[in-house]
Structures are given as structure tokens and as C-alpha cells.
Length: 217
Image (cartoon, rainbow, N blue to C red; front, side, top):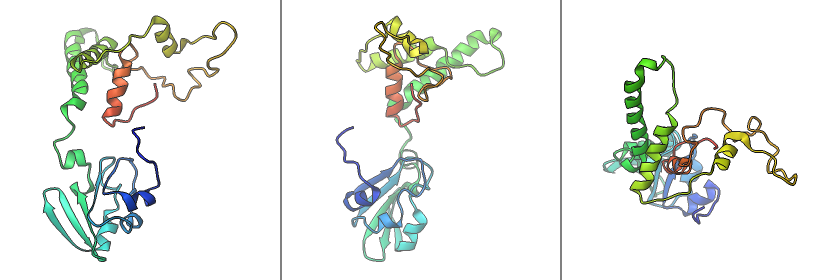
């Protein structure tokens, strides 16, 4: 998407200087990859616990280990090369930094704060159950975020909102844009959407930017 080459991990291991796993799976970087890495390669993880990098394998390959600076462990391999592991292989943005930046978390916190305010003001008529964030609150947060960044986006027309809500009809002339119903479409989620109005694009943008798992809209 941004011009980066796509390749296997085996090929990438020979070329890269810095590696950061973000797959959510285990054993993404293994002995086979360490064997191919350059002297001084830096490895880290930001996807899932500390199992994405096979640290036990790295330790078995090493003759010594030392901490060169805070959050940096240098493994000296038996062939003389060195590999630097950041944050003990744990989520690097949490283990070796100060967590997520405010620019990523501010919308979530704003939604939480406004939701608490909503519950305080409406507690008398609320049941003891789980509610989705009211659409008007969610849209308000998205709107303020866009304004704070000086960004303007198009508003969905009523026809577009109806289409996204699953009310698409066959156009005149008989040409079908889709013959898959909302119930059959695997990219349709039957759960209530938090952002189904004019600012859903912004919501989707920032969720993706945060690296947060997102479902199809």
C-alpha cells in the first residue's frame, strides 16, 4: 500500500535491519530467520504477547547476553553476530515506551467519558444490561476529532445511509450491483454499529491507524 515490498520472512530476514512483528501469532521470527539476519539486527514485537519471537531459540543460539541500554538486550551468537531484542519481546509500544499516544486513544477516552455522562443523566430509565454507545455521541466524537485535525469529509446522503444499512435495491435497468443479502454477506456484521452515520469513515480510519482489530463495515 505504501510502496513496501511483500516477501517471505525467509527472504526478508536477509535484508532487514529492524524487524517488528505485528501478526498476533506465535513463532513469527524463529531460529531459521535468526540464522539469516545481519550482524546488529534489531528485533521487536508489537502484535501479541512475547511468543511472536522465538526467544528460547535465540537464547540457545547465543553464547552470551547483555543489556546494552534500558529495554535493549544484545544476544551474541556463537558465530560472532549480534542480535538486539527490544523490550524482552513484549509489546514494544507498552513495554518500552509510554503506551499508546494520545492521538490514538483520545477518541476512545472521549467515547468513554461521554458514555459515563450519558449513564449518569439517564440512569433512571436504563435497565441493567449492556448498551451500545449512542450514535449521536459517537458521531460527535468523530466530528470533533476531524475538526481538531482540520479535516473535512463528505456527508452520506440518505440513499447512501440506507444502502449501508442493508436496504440496497436492484437499480433500474435490471443491473444488479450485488446479489448477496446483508444476512449472507460475510463482510456484514449483524451487531449494532457504533459509527454508521456520516463520520463512519473517520472512525474506520483511526481504528485502523491504531492497529486495532477492525471488522468489515
